[in-house]
Amino acid sequence: MIIGSNLLRFDSIQSTNTKALMLIRNEDIPEGTVVFTGFQTAGRGQAGNTWESEKGKNLLLSIILYPESVSPENQFIISMTISLGISDLIDKYHPGCKIKWPNDIYLNDKKIAGILIENSISGSILKSSVAGIGLNINQVNFPPNIPNAGSLKQITGKEFDTEVLLKELLSELDKRYKLMLYGDRESIRREYISKLYRLNEWSRYRSAGSAFKGRITNISDEGHLIIENHGGKMMTFSFKEVDYLS
Image (cartoon, rainbow, N blue to C red; front, side, top):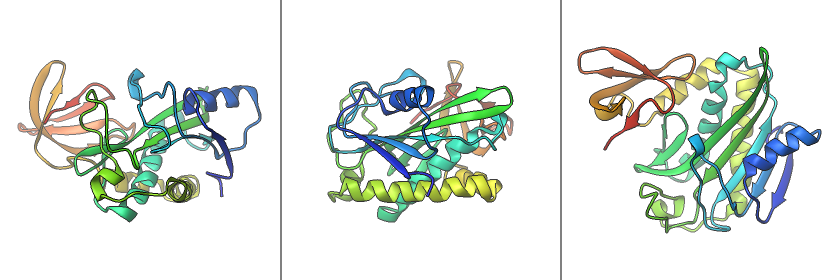
């Protein structure tokens, strides 16, 4: 077992990603080490956003990885791998979850998980990667500033044992990570694309201040989102260059 071979628990912590990055800088930390907490005082999300969670209700963790076989230009494979590992767990309890590009996990049009990947690159080598995960399990009330949030309990009506789900999540992530290291990376890419939220559905988007209709068709090798507009033009977007509209 790689992911979960070393589990560091904290009752409360500023941010699991911040702690994991500090450990990498200051100590010889084995690959697969998991920083886990019941509560974050300053949880971080994508693009400087915060991640809010009730104490003890959800899974909050960061995984330390050393994927040096992955080239920097292909680093999005790590996001794909982690996204699929989380999806594997969720589908066991409620099939049908989707991945909203780049790496939010949606179930019944509700965001139930978010991922923050922070990579360290030295020259042509991806030295380390910290994969932060927030997975909503038993929380049912969310702040009004995040109206699209959901949880497994909210959707299924069932209370879950977070300790059991933590073990299962680490097991699923470990399987996916080993596939990325030693197996067929193209199969990871294909499966990730097949689970994309709004794949091949005509929907509304906004880019550079203008709204348009399009459908998600693919992901580039670098992990950029490809959307076809009604005129048949294929448009490629980097992170934060396009917004999903209702």
